[in-house]
Length: 140
Image 1 (tube, rainbow, N blue to C red):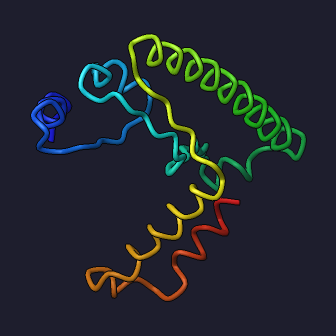
Image 2: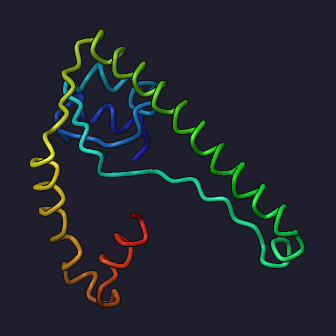
């Protein structure tokens, strides 16, 4: 569904919720038709930097360390920029009459627990055993 169709569906009551990053929601003007914003943190975006093994092995240990260190520094900077931008967007949402709901850790955990049922649906029976736990561990 295109963003315009989602907007219309919210406006008409065909759907009662949508999820997207804050900039997409704000720039799509969803605050005009949805007056509640739940900050449940169900998605955490990560930027990965990938290089080929041949390239990596062609670098000296000092160059490898420099690359890793500068990538970490860039990640910290990027996270700061995103945090600032999201804070500004939340203020804009509030100014336009949107109620921001930041659930308690207990409520967030109950949402996580409820979503785990998804992984046991018959449609996903071909997933390998322990896939959820493997992915969760890799995210830490």
